[in-house]
Image (cartoon, rainbow, N blue to C red; front, side, top):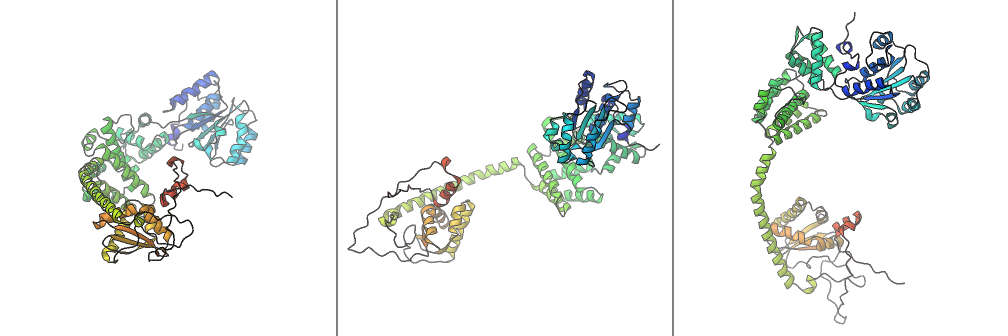
Length: 570
């Protein structure tokens, strides 16, 4: 007789044989006992958790000669035919390869025929989420109102891809991942029944690698039993699965804790020479660090399905790192695992990640560094405030000594006037020099604006160029008077503060437009009446929460001097 794989040979025959799905087996058994048998069921959950096996047990329970019963006999003809797949009343359809509308139309034509051997015709549609939209639409009406002798069982690993219209017509049962302890107990029962010798550590290792799927665990056990010479040992399982092993992980963790970069690289090179996978190295290291983190927090690893660890090793290595450092290291390893998918040189990616773990400091050390640096920051802030006070006093003296016309903003002309230069304090007084110190001061001003994240001011000043400076003034020329006026009106105070800090003395910012005459405007004619100062229009105050986004951006660039516009009466 041909060899039968373990996961097929030990497929559950009754609801009592289901592992880890007691909530589902109990519900279905009660439904059969009470006669509340639905017409459509949706089984969803991870792979290898018993969805198809439960569907076949349910079909056998409905069609057993002694039933419907939650405990089918397994010996009558309907039970045997359903078990070996020869029943004419149970149809197992793979939606991945029969996903079109034509297959569903054929199904709709066959549902009306009466069962051949049993009471019910059971349609098991596996991976139902693979059906096309048209196929789902064709199935919809039949699924909602099938004949009384038909039961649909839809199985899927991705329930979110099943349309809501289909789910609303089904009773949904969610299969959960099987715990490592439950998988280990089931494998222990199987190896005892088949006279296979296996170490408990080997079974525990297989259960962890199965990741909640009993079918995966039995497939790994089948492979290990075939290759093992006598006993299935932990070392044999580790070699078959390509695992790194605890000893190497413990050595690597100790080297990382001691910041021994050369030893870390040597361990990595040795593992690669033995044929270990880079991804597996990072996965097992992150699992070990997770065990250390949980051990520090809870003091026990029971019932957590963690990486199989020795208590002595956990007690020793949990002292190497603080809790926040462990979380930081696990995050860095996960980043490296993501980078491995796209890296042209995976080994370099792993080496960089491990070396960064040797050199990065924990949050506690960073906080200590910040605490030491705090007094220095406070001293620097006090120094800047003192310089700002000096600059403010110097500006006040200059404003008092200057002429009223130079100190006050120019009045708005009643009629269009000749263009005049935009300046913050009039035209430069005294000879200007554009030497290396002035150029450095100009570049320093731009760099400081960039460092302070003053993007609007920086964008405006980059439209101009440094012309020259003297003992008290710093002159910038712009291509047009609009930018010069904007700089003088809105950004002068900030620029003068930065210039004073850089130059060590108060400097007056002069901004002028190159499209305007460089000479001051001519004096008014003697016979002309003195200019009458026109009252500025009233300011309009708009609260920040009422400003539209476009207006808020304009006020950030051009200032918040908003005036009311009076409409002329016709």
